[in-house]
Image 1 (tube, helix red, strand yellow):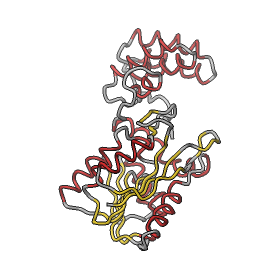
Image 2 (cartoon, rainbow, N blue to C red; image 1 turned 30 degrees about the vertical axis):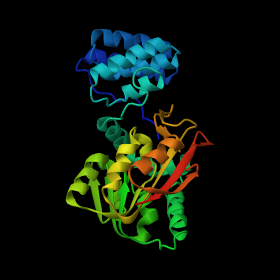
Image 3 (cartoon, rainbow, N blue to C red; image 1 turned 90 degrees about the horizontal axis):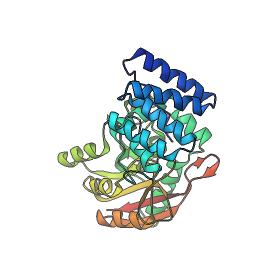
Length: 312
């Protein structure tokens, strides 16, 4: 899933807001030159209008003005320290600033809160998303190789979203817990009545709290979640603190031909195989499966991905 577009927050100046709206109308009709001119006037009058700076960056990008786009996104980042718009990600995509900046909670929460209502349909019908089924089959296969049953007393679904993975794994879990940053996504999951417990929160904070409380899980899954994490090694290490003896960690990621982490044009992170092997081993896990698999498509083209299963 990619960003849903600029987030409009009033500048507090009625004329500036009207200029912004007019510019968006020009952009919607494909007249990006007119849109850029209006947006430039807007930010000149109201220099802290973050939404207008971001829109100006996006418009200049469409016009092929790399330098102008970078300048505008830089100003958007300055005016919006919480990075609701994702300006820092745009700068990284354009080859400016940090190569793989962390996505802020504000950006991710806004992104998924806006997307929650149409999330299931968009993934399954438009993107042909098969992540939960592929992940479940990978876990079954890995356990079968060791003669272990597909049954878990406690299961943690990281970044549970609307519950697509929860629905796939529910038959195999006595107690199913889900956590997600977006309250709107969690509300959709709660309506499905799949989980024994649902928590709205940051993954790292949740895991730290669970470690402090002594919680242990027999299976921890993350389906199409780590594509929004720029430091996967830290998350896997934290999972190591809540995994039960002989517990299993299973997740999907997008991948690339390099060795490290890379921000893709879709504003999702991809990981090289070497990075994943090191992160899994560094957290004390034994790698059981690392297989290539396309869990979704992008514009009709299968996205390069990996399915990982590891045991404590």
